[in-house]
Image (tube, rainbow over all chains, first blue to last red):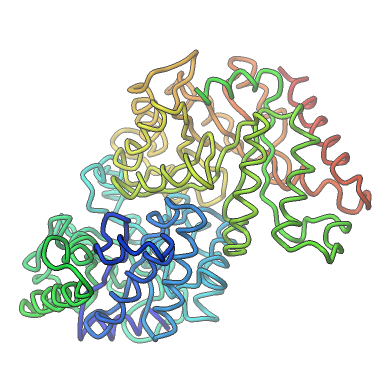
Length: 284
Length: 284
C-alpha cells in the first residue's frame, strides 16, 4: 500500500518535493536550447531534478495545473514526468484536487490511477461528501493506491468556509472525522489508512486538534518555505508522531535561480532539498 | 459576456447538453469503424451531436473526467470537441470542477480559458474560499468568461457537509452568499453576474431559498433525466425567473441505444433534445 510505503519513507526524509514547474523556473541552459520543444525542456528539468533528489525525498508531488496551463503539450510533459519518476520506484502524488461524484469520480480514478497519468496517490476535494470518495475505493483495495483529501488548507480565505462553526464543531473538524471514517473502511497496513488529508502549516494548534481526531490519517502538509512555514512549526507535531510529509515546491525548484548557471542547476536544487531534510530532521 | 449570452439563449431553450461521452455510448457505426482511432470516434460522435442539436440547446457542457480517463488520447478528443463547438458560435461549459488557489488557480484559468482547452465558462469548487475564485477575475473582466461554482449538489452525500448548520445558517447558504458577493464585484451585463452556481434539482425548496439569497446568480442545474429530476420540479422556479440552464447528459446522448443503428444516431439524439426543450418550456 502506497500510503504505508510513504509513511515509512517519511521517517528517513519527510520532504515532498513539488514539481510545480513553470517555464520561468527553467535554468538558462534549458531555456536557451533551441533544439528542444517546451514539452522536452520541462521534462528534462523534472528528470534532472528527480535524478538528483530521489535519495533525499519521501515522494514527489506534481501540480497538474502547471501542466494543464500549457494544454496538450504540458500534459505530455506531465505524463512523461510521472512515468519517469514511478519507473524509478519513486512515490508520486498527483496534485489534481479532483472533486466529482459517482461514475464521474470513477473516471477521474481511472484517469489518474491507470494509463498515461498513473500516479500512486492523488489529492481530492470532498465538498460533495462521501460520493466523492468511495469511487476510488477499488483502486485503493486492488492497486494499493491512496488519496489525500483537502481538509484545512493554508490559504488566507480557508476561513471562509472551513472554519465556520457548525452544530458539530468547526467544519474542518467534521471533515476530519469523515476522512478518518472513510479511510477506516479500507484495509490498513501499519498505522495509517489509505486516505490521508491535506492540512496547512499555518495553524499549528488546529493541526494538533485535527491529528487527535484522526489518529490513522497521514498528512500532506504544504506551506514549507515559499509559502511561509518553517521547521519549528512542525516540531511539536512530528515529535509525537511521524505522521506527515512536508511539501516544498518553489522553494526548492527555483533554488538555482541567480545562483548558478550551466548544467549545475540540479545540484543546487539537490543541496537545497538535502538542507530542507536536515532542517526538519534536526527538530525531531 | 458569456453568462449574459447564456441567459439570453436560455429563454429559447434552457437545455444544456452534456457531452459526458464514454466509449460504451458510441453508436455501432462508429464502434465498428476500424479506420478510426478512439480519439476520432469520440470526436466524430460529439461533432455529429453538435451539428444536430445546436439549434435546440442553450449550451454544451463537457465533462472532462470522461476524457481524462482515456489519457492523452482522450484529452485530444476533448480539445477538438471544444474547438469545434466554439468555432461554430456555441457556448461551451468546461465541467472541470477545479479547486485550487492563488497562482495555481491562475494556471487552471490559463489552461481552460485559453489555448487547447479554451472554454467559455468553467465549473469550479470553492471549498478553499475566495482565493479559489479571484484568480479567474482577469479572464472574466478581459475576455468575458464565466464560472459556475459548486453550491448545493444533487448527490445523496451532499448532506455530509453542504447541509451542516453553521452559525450563519446551512453551509450551502453561506456559500450562496459568498458566490453572490464575489460575482457582484465584477461588471455585470443584464441581470446576472459572471459567476453562476451549480445547484441540484433534488431539493426544490432549497432551490427557492438559494435563489432568494442570490438574485444576480445564474444557475447550472444538473439532474434532469438520467439523474431523476423532471420538468415539474423546475416549473415553480422557472415561472418566476428564467435563471438557469438544465443539464442532461446520459439521458440525451444515449437516446440512440437500442433504438436505431446506422448513421441516424444523431437524429435520434436531436429528437430527444428537442423533446426535452419542449417538455421544460411547456411548464413555464
